[in-house]
Length: 572
Image (spheres, helix red, strand yellow):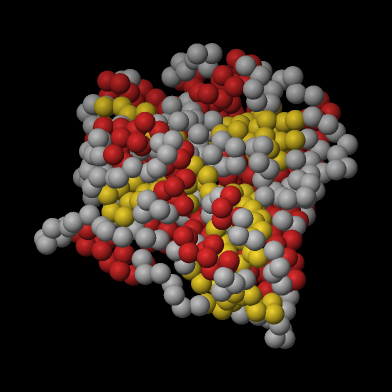
C-alpha cells in the first residue's frame, strides 16, 4: 500500500502515526491458538479479516472453553480469504462483507452471524458531536480542513482512515458515495482497525473511521458522532445503517467437517446471540425468534417474552446528559427489564436536546422519559406529566449543580467570572437554573454578566469546553462530572469547583398523564423491585445505581423555590 509522502522533518502528529503504523500494521502471519479447556479434540483452522479478528477470538474462546475444539485463528488480508477456504488451506474464513456470486459459486457456504456499524469518531478536543454526511464527505475530500468550519474548535483536522480495499472503506464508499471510497487528501492510511483504535486514543484533533462494536464495549477519549441526526447506536446498524454497515459471516466448504457445521449453528443459536450482543455486535438470529432472547432487537426495541400478559408498546425517551453511546449503556438494561416484566415492547428513544422532551410528550411520540428536575417542571406545568421513580446510588438520589473553572486560572470566586465566557446546558437545573440564581444574586442577568454565553447539548460537552480552555467556566451536573473524573483521573486535578447548588432529584422516570393506571402501578413495581434479583441488579449497575426509590411531585420543592426566586417561566 503506498502511503502519502511525508516530509523529512516529521511533525509530532506524523511521528506518532508512523510509530502506530510500525507497531500495528504488520499482518499477523503467526497463527494464534485459542486454548482449550479439557481433552484434546478437533482442530479448526480459521482465516479472519482484520475487522473481525479481535471479536472472533473472543467468540471461539467462549465456544472452545466448553467443547473439545481447538481454533487456530490467523489474521489475513480480506482479499485472500476466499482462496484460502476454497483451497481448503483453512476450514473457516471470517469476512466482514457479503461474498459476491462468483465467490460463493466456488462450492462454499456462507452464514452471516452479526452486523456491525462503521462509526465516525472525533477526538474530544474538537468539540464536535455531530456532522452531516455532506460535511464528512467534504472533510474526507480535503475541502474542509479545520474543525471550526463545522462548528468546532479552531484546529486542523487530522483524518485517520483505512485503505480503500478494506471492508470499512468499501462500506463507507457504498453508503456515503454510492460507489468507491474516494482518495482522501492529507490523511494517514492505517492498515488495521487496531491501529486506527490506537490512534483514536492518542492523536489530537482527529477524525477516525472505525468499526462500531469495539467502541460499544470500550471507553475511548473521543466523541462518537451523530451523522445526519442519527446517533451511533447498535440499534441503528442493521436497517438505518449508521452510517455504513459491516456484515460478519463465515465461509466454509460444503463438505466441511461436522465440527464446522456445529460451530455455524452455535453462531445463530440463542447462546451465540447472547455472546455476540455482549461484544457490541448486533446478532443475526437465524431461525431463532427474538422474543425469548431479550437482546437488543433490530427494530430499536426490547421485545417481551412469549408469555407476555400485557400487550402494547412503551416508548421511553432519554435526555442527552452524556453522549448517545453512554446513554445507551446506562438505560438499555432497565428498558430490557421493563419489556420482560411488563410484556410490552419497549423502545428507547435518544433525544438530541432537553427541550425536545417537551415536544415529544406533547405530540404523543413518547410515553415516558428519564429527565432532570427543570425539564420535569416544564413537563408537569405544561402537560401534567408526573414522576414515578428515580435511581439511588450510595444512599443518595439527588444531584447538585457545580460551577467549574480550570485550576490553573486565577479564578477563585464567582464574582471573578463577570465579563468572562460561560457554558451551560439549557433546560437543566444544574446548568441553566443554577446560573440564573447566581447572576440574579449579583444583580444581573446571565447575558449581561458574562461576555459570552455558550449553550451546549450535554454537561460532558460543557466540562470539555472548560478543560480545553474554550470557555472560562461552566455550570455542570456533579454526577456527570464524577463519572468523567472516574473515566479520566487527570481531569480532576485540572478543574476547580467555585460554586455548589442545593440538591435536586436525580433524573426520574416520568410518565404521561394519560398513561394507563394499571400499567403505571405495574411499572412502579418493576422499578422498585430491581434490587431484589440478579437481572434487575445488573440493570441498576449499568446506570451506576443501587436501587430505584419512589418519587413524587413534592420532591421538587427546592427546584420550584429556586425557579420562583428568578421568575422562571415553566410554560415557555
